Length: 328
Image 1: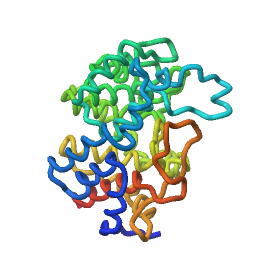
Image 2 (image 1 turned 135 degrees about the horizontal axis):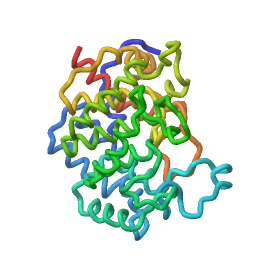
Image 3 (image 1 turned 120 degrees about the vertical axis):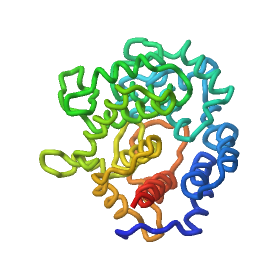
Image 4 (image 1 turned 120 degrees about the horizontal axis):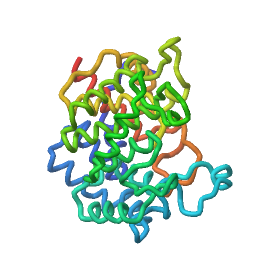
C-alpha cells in the first residue's frame, strides 16, 4: 500500500465515470470541477436511470418501501436472526436516495414526503415518520432526510439538542442509562443537524451543539479511545458503503469535509491521523476497497463485494483528500 496520495489518473477517473449516474454526477462536481449545468444535467438522470430508478420502482403505492418505516411489514424476530437486519424499508431506501443525490425539488419528492407523512409510522410506538422515533441515531437520520427533502423536522432537532451527553456526543443507549456517547450515534446526529443548518440556516443552539459533537470526535482523532489512544473499534478502520447507521473513519472525514465547505472554515488539524490512515489504504491503482458488508436483505447490490475496489469509497476518499490538500 502507498502512504502518499495518488493524483487521480485518467484511467481512474474513467473507471469512476463508468458507473451509475449517482456516482457520475458527484465525480463531475467534486473531482472534475465541472460546471454546475453539466453536473446538474447528470444528476437529473438519477430519477430516471440506474439505481435511483430501480429503487423508485420498488416504492409502494402509499409512498413507503416494503410496507414499513424501519423494517419491512411482517418481518419477524426470527427473520432478523436468520437473515440479518433488512435494508429495504422506508428509512433506508430514503437514505439511499439521499446518497444518490436525488433532486429534492422534483414533483416525485413532494408527493412522496406527503404520502410518507400520512401513511408511514415507526415500529417502536407508531409515531408518524416525520415526527421521529426514540433512538437518537434514527432521529438523526430522520432529520437529515427531512431537511434534505424539504420537510419541517424542527421538533426532532429540538429533541436531539436536549439529548446531548455531557461528553458532547450522543448514544442510542441513553434511555437505558448510558452516560457515554458512541461514534455511531454521534455521526448520525451530526449529519442530521448539519443538513438542517444547510436547509434552514440553523440557530445559535444548533451550531453550538454541533460544535460540541464535533469536538467529541476530534478529541478522539475520529477513531481512538480517549483513555488509551487505541482504536475504539477495529471496524471504525474498515470501509463500507452504504454505512446505514454504522460509523467508520471515512464517514467521519466526509462529514467534516461537508461541514467545512458549508461553513467556510478550514480543516481542523486534529483530523491528520485519520487523513494519514486514509492515505495508507489507497492502492497502487489509486482506488480504495470495500472492506466489508453487513448481512441483510437489500433491493440490489451496488458494489462488487468485500475486498474489491469500490467506486463509492474511492469517490468519497478522493474528495476528502482534495479538500484537505486544498487547504494545505
